[in-house]
Length: 119
Image (cartoon, rainbow, N blue to C red; front, side, top):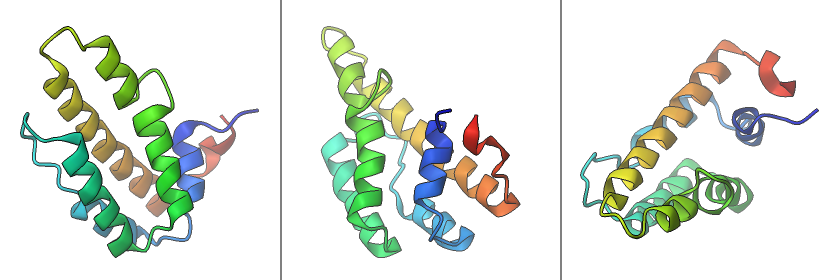
């Protein structure tokens, strides 16, 4: 049985309390501006990780899934949309999706919902 991505991330973040995870979510600069640059976002992401005490292994786990690791990663979507002019909108949609992922993880962590860990 394989862990779902969300539960894998949840298990990687278990040392954080719910309030720390919520604070981490609030540190990330989700401005909603179409012109927001991935590089600028990553710099802010690294700063937020440092402030929240998220170690390098946890940080790499997030980046692997969100930037390089799958069909919905920023890198692959950028390649697919390279010839269109919609990349900035795709980029912002992914940043918003990450924000929602973090909020869902925080909510499940708060509720102690570990039933999906082996789904």
